Length: 213
Image (cartoon, one colour):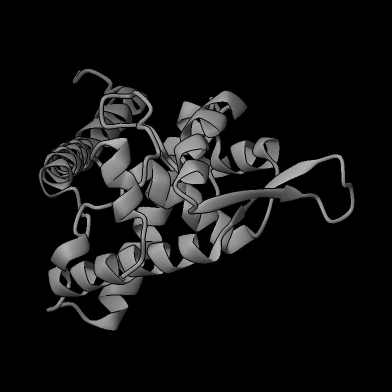
């Protein structure tokens, strides 16, 4: 009499066999993803993605993100700025100090509470920011010159989502809570904080670089 086949075991083996190619494909895709992220990080550090022309790399990442946040959100206190950027208040205080010294940011009284002080982008800071922003915009246009508008939109959406997931992971939150943030990472490439000097030179040179042409 032929042995009775264990249909449950057979079905289980069949499912495992069927899922193996899919698992291998997922692993291969994730390997490719992590490799491309590593290549991107290296090339971004090499080029610094600091724009084109004379203002290329004339403003460090921390300064750019701080000025950009104040431009988008308007005047705010140190605590609010720190909370919005996902960093601590002491870091914001340290990074914004040279921006105040060079006249890119000014301290003013809170419109509703004269005892409170808020940080505000100065006209000089706005002009400097737009100068750098325009240069970086041109770089992105050159790098993605052969892309369609749909491809640019898709890449921006996915990169924003990816950055949000990384931010959520760093904060110990589920990736689904990462939102659309991630653009305000002011940390350096080695995990340290970059000084928001407005450029990568000395303080005196920073004062010159901070002056819009």
